[in-house]
Image 1 (tube, rainbow, N blue to C red):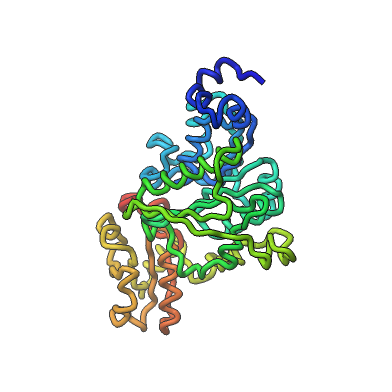
Image 2: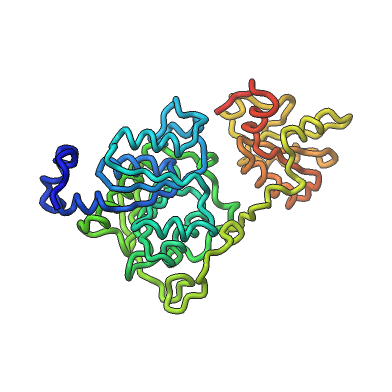
Length: 377
């Protein structure tokens, strides 16, 4: 069918490509693609898929824009800080290409809604940053027959593949079990060079376009590894595992699971009594024998601001400085958002400290609820 004149003008550089042409562009315009996450990977992917003319882009995200996102999440601007990432994304993508329909899903992808959401699209681009969501996306894609364009980043490195495509492996063929959560630092803790998710997210968009338009050789059965510091890429061959519990010959997992529990991250774990809210810590600090505050953040974070009278022991130094921590006093650990201090608390308990708590939400929550003057970042 002939493309409308406005599409011919907008996609002229695509139409001149003999491998794509009018037929390929028509496939893109008829396609329905779901992006899981509008963050570091989802940002460049969404921009390039919208610019390419993918007809319908669904986006799942329930987060808001934070200033620390802007170093890599290029879909959002300074004016969007505090705003829903979905609202920010929809506005930007509709401005970039009004011919594209953007379908926002203002929710967290869960085992309760994943099959319905994923099943409404023909390709999924996984831009998530945590293991529970990756396994959930993979399993939902296998169960619905929708290819999963996977990407992940860590500091200066990235990886990319296409899972759950017909005849190819799924994510569990490569990683049947998730690593222990204590061995998986968050982006906040490990850091990431902002351009790396830009590279990987753009490559994910490329794989989506190849799948939809029938171009080239998609990364089915191949894992692409990207090393930004070396300026190098390499590939690993992957094959479908006939013993895979999800896509194997005799699957043992046939329904979606409780993925937080599967990945060692119980949904209610952080509500244990060792967690103090900012208000709870204020009350404790007013007691006759207040707890000793331990800041486990890095030097540069400490320099931005810290709680009064806190002892600074960066998490990496904790094992060597145990002798500095009193065993006859209550200790309250804190970090930026609470993940590092929680793990530090668990470590100290293993080392025989039985009077340890941590500040749930970290200095970010403290700034929101107690002292807005503390350095935000």
